[in-house]
Image (tube, rainbow, N blue to C red):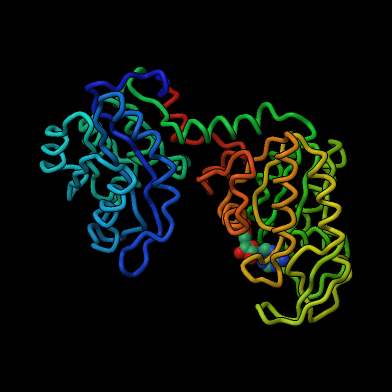
Length: 399
Ligand code: AMP
């Protein structure tokens, strides 16, 4: 594989798989352009070298071919704004004559955006003929779509087979994601604390199991903590619990003990009489929640305990909120942990925040620039930390 920053794109047509899967409102206005903005350095470097850029992406989950709602044409004007003084063309199809002609006519310094890849079912099927057609549009393949790196789709993985090793590479965003993730997984400075939260144990089992072999401390917060308490015979009232996962929770606790990994559960919780923003709330021990009440956030004692562990850490991985942070009454735990991670970072720790909801939380509390790295790829980052090889990464590295 080639190294993006060392590659000279002069006179080259770079075919870039980007993740422009941005949220749009009913007027087709972009409500959060993070994913588009994140890939601009990659595009700009190619243009500055004197090359041209062909962008391909998916948007949403179109079921039946071309659908206006999912057309990437809605992104063209914002793309122009982000790029400034650059000519941006749009092709109404990602393959076919129009795409071929527009790609061929592209001059150095210009950008062509192709229509939604998922208008073809071949994209998600990883169809080789479709991938080959796409590959013909450019001279060099750049994968900058970390958000879809865990999918073996035509444009994210299969297409790489149609480029020789010296003509395929990661873009700057992908490279930054991979470097940060590898740093945490393979060369984490100890103490290494993983903070795992969110709703369900079942979603986070694989990541916890993989981290047991790497982390020194694992903090478990959010709804999933109550399954761990109940599994130990404690009373958790009406808190979220996956009864069928209780044996697994006990196995994790036993394995952690044998490996010398400290598991930290929230000792207290903010409890509520209903799952609602206007619920009545109080604080109690997480292992003695009265019937009719549910734990919706970690409590003050838990915040203090977790903070102490976080501030001692040299490497921090955070995935998943500590409570129902979408509601103001249950925000304190997640916000306090975000602040502790930011504080540890300012003292020299490396912190990586990955996974949709914890990223949303750091953004909500305006702390994104106070942590070392915020990953743009929720599912991809999760699978990476589960120890899986991501097809989008493997395909570029191979050959
Ligand atoms: P996940 O997608 O698994 O990271 O879960 C995130 C969701 O978990 C968020 O929408 C939170 O509101 C929810 N959550 C966090 N803590 C709790 C809790 N104690 N009870 C119920 N839901 C929770």
